Image 1 (cartoon, helix red, strand yellow):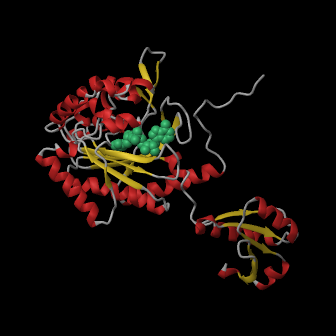
Image 2: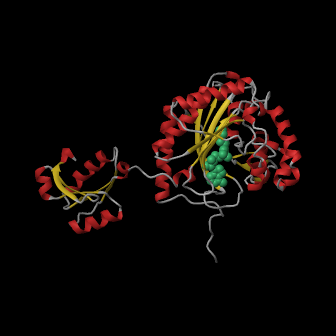
Image 3: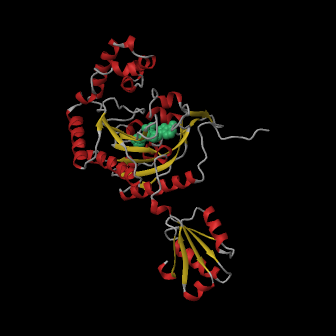
Length: 405
Ligand code: HAM
């Protein structure tokens, strides 16, 4: 009988990957907490209607990529393709919209999209996301962008930031009509997908990946030239704050995002080092979404980082990589080692070998643990209150006072 394999596009996270994964989540969570975010966890399975109403019926995610089924109680449910919709549902369900005030929540966990798997594109992937409710100031938009930058900087990841404004219910419909007029004139030359989208979701035509379509769109009306006064002022202010903070960005008027709930600010962070699937984070403002999901009008903004894509770029910082191996050269040293291990584990990964052995054997075992520091205690060390250490990276050996270790 053939062994059972994990499903296509769905991976186990183990070994070095799991170490990186937890390292990322711990540090991204720490940064989010410093920005005032608290943790929220919502179910992985939700009613299908939730995503139809938020992400949008004409989006690829809802149209083609949902893991959707009827459960035993005849409910139409699906595995969440993204995190925002569930968080907004929870916000409304728990009546935070009625209470008013400001809420900042972060989350991480698996998302599911039935896409064609390739490098950087999985069917089960993980996001780290943040959502803010109740703040309409454009300073929050800047704050969110600066926080993503802080996370990427911590992991020493280079990025490009693309920025756009998608307008509001005052200016977007006027712009959409202008765009449809333009697109209808060049209809015959556009691809099949674009033709379908002119009817269903004309804004999405702007982000067609086909070269010929992109050429034809070159002279299309630009949303940023068609913003109402409020959206225009906000967008200019956002650029000003980012400039003031030396955050580089590029305006991309074709950046429309694949989810329908955005208005005003939309952004994407990309990396040139991970191949075609280059988006490492994306997000924007969604001031109408709470209302779409039955709540009292409340402004919202957020983002999500694709953890797997990011991990390709994360290198654990050198100092974090220290791993200590503790070994006893005789039975009597073991008790002392248990004390040292407890202290060292406050901030360093520490292995302790329970069987007393000679030098050579200890070094072999230390290599298996990928230790960077080998520390041994035997009779002489016990008598002198010292410990023998060897730094594997520098090959430096020394015997030092226990309290200095
Ligand atoms: P999104 O752009 O669809 O936005 O996804 C965010 C990130 O998830 C992407 O930039 C990418 O890194 C990662 N990602 C998406 N699909 C895949 C995949 N198939 N395989 C691996 N990684 C993937 C959202 O999901 C919004 N909920 C973000 C947001 C939060 N907007 C406001 N709040």
